[in-house]
Length: 218
Length: 218
Image 1: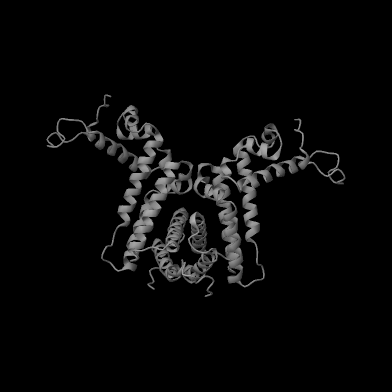
Image 2: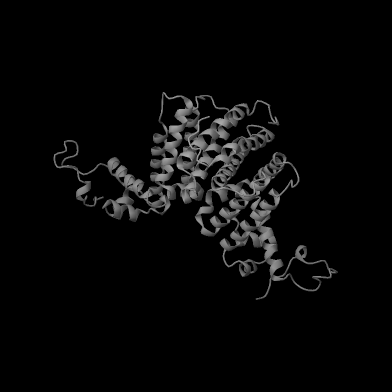
């Protein structure tokens, strides 16, 4: 299949030793198209980004996009997977800090990630379930975020009850942030600090889940 | 438009004074069809319930269903609205009890509601965003649940920060319950008690949101 002409911005520098004189390879081309999609996700809901929009924004033909992603949904799944990778990399910060400080920087990174692409984040939360592959990316990502939060709190072995609660806390964070963005009724710093403290104040009860202490009153 | 024959189970008792000798009126017929949909929602995701399925389950013609609900989506929106009404009625319990007891019975009712229709609840949470009208029902319901929780806690005037946090807590509850249902790794009673205590332990911080106390360390 003939590749569409690569626009100047996509071409390697003329003297680049590794790519000089040839077109982008398939992996690089895929990554380039996904990268265009990632940028678009910050401006519109990810599931409204079509192969046509990516082609236009990337300065390539629609046929080229469809060569790498047979359907627009394939492209969106790849975009979402890449976006999840970005999130997980963003959250993996503060190694070496004490748990509560590390929680603060990780949470700040999570809030910033949502702030950078609220329409896409909202679309993932409220619409990923309309496609099995999108839902799988969502579930895998949520599960990986739970692992990161557990590591942040210094909890390597995670009983099922605690996993549930961390998932719940993550859902609370995203719900609060997505709605906070509507009108920002309180300072960002207060919201982040509240959510961090919420995790820490729930933790002692969460650690006791499943040990038969049901029904303890405050 | 001719109504389809009403099967025996739908017919009024021969001697019923109010309905004897006539067919169901339009409001009653609509309510009957929505009621069939509500029952089906407990067995399958609400957005997979079609006009055809409701017709078959209700023993009426598909044409009759389409007479009242021009599209399957119209039917699903009406079902979701009715289901939301059921939820709000279920949650409105325990008037006269002290706030923490009232929170317990309300939360228990919320968990039971999700337990009765997990596939539909999950579909609402993860797919309602695929249709503006479904999303509007979801948002209106969430907002009404916030009001009920606030009333339960004896908080009539609700600052914006506190509204956010209650929304977040509701999202945490539904996330925890939906995932707990997968394998029920801890006793139900422990989960409900944890979630109740979580609301109460977060409340003091939540009440201070927006008063300029940002950045207070524990």
